[in-house]
Length: 69
Image 1 (cartoon, rainbow, N blue to C red):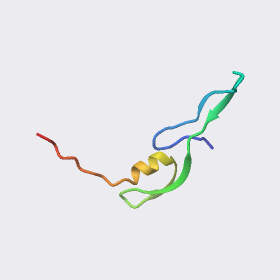
Image 2: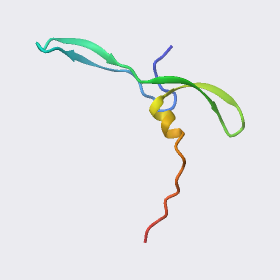
Image 3: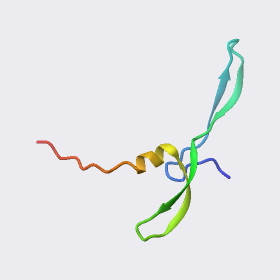
């Protein structure tokens, strides 16, 4: 099971954990993924692995900005 967001494409990042004595050991930062059931405009449902940040962005109301000038 891949740890990848199917919407944004976020994947695990790699780097070093650095201790107080400056020893470097490899570590990974994993994305915060959840399984979500998504419904499209045709009414079809699909279960998708999505990052929580993408889920929060999708659940925001859409605001229409007026053009100034």
